[in-house]
Length: 122
Image 1: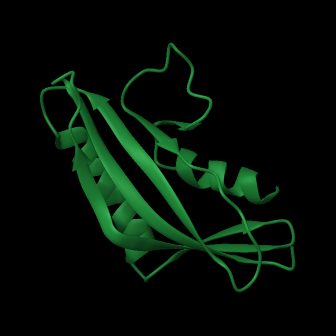
Image 2: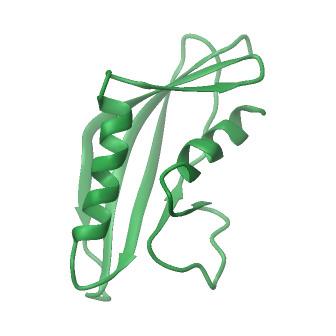
């Protein structure tokens, strides 16, 4: 598993469909996660982000999903995601979550801010 595959694995581990933000299919359902992909190597912090989406009149589903992600990355201060040749330390950024309005009042979106360190040579 390479670095990008490790990020994909992390986002898909939350029980909803997850897509690279640049390749979301037209028929993608809700709830879903869209995430940025950025990688680096030792001694370089990388900003990562994700958006949690639901089509609902309630914030309940995306809020629960945000709490699930928070539990993983803030529970012990980080989440470790292994890949061939190293590990990714995933930590909460600041602010960790932010509600985002949408012209379609039934679309609920929460923006997640993360910081990652890639513990590898390259």
